[in-house]
Amino acid sequence: MFLRLGLLTLLVALAACDAPRGTAPVPAKAEDREVEPVLSQQQVHERTEQCGKKSREEFRRAWNEGTVMTAHGQMRAEFTNHYNVKLNSCFYLLTVNHYTNGSDPGSAAASTLNKMLFDINEGERYGEYLGPATDESPPVKFPETCKVVSLNCASRREWEVLVGPYMED
Image (cartoon, rainbow, N blue to C red; front, side):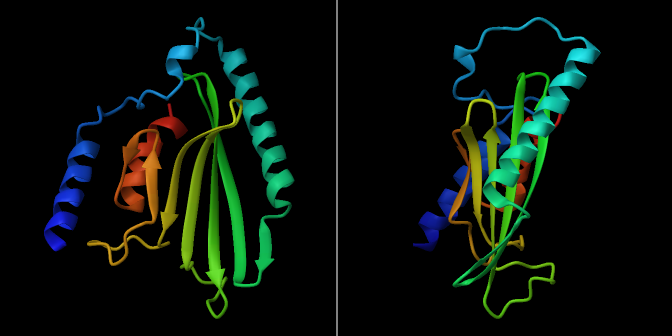
């Protein structure tokens, strides 16, 4: 069992290393998009503002003020957004911390962390991380879900590296 887990970890690490640096992985539906002309600074600014507005509206619709009480504890949500000029897409990154009953919501460590990356205009999920809120090395507990587009990952740090090209230019 440990041999299989070790081989799986090695394969995931090698797959992540093969990703070219500085470029985003090709989105699943990139072939369906038409190549758009180079945008002016004003157009980029307008699309960035539209992206922020649409992201705020989506967050308020789904999370109101960002805190929800459940039978198992408390969930706190926050979001960031980014208009990616190269991909001509508005990305919405939702982060939800799950605090179980008995854990302190004021502390830095949540029981579980869930991060989801969406193309807000297409309504498509590009990635998800669901696992421990802390990122120990070596991991004490591997994430339940860790994937961006078609690439799997084994930790929150790897997930953040894979998401980086979508959330920055």
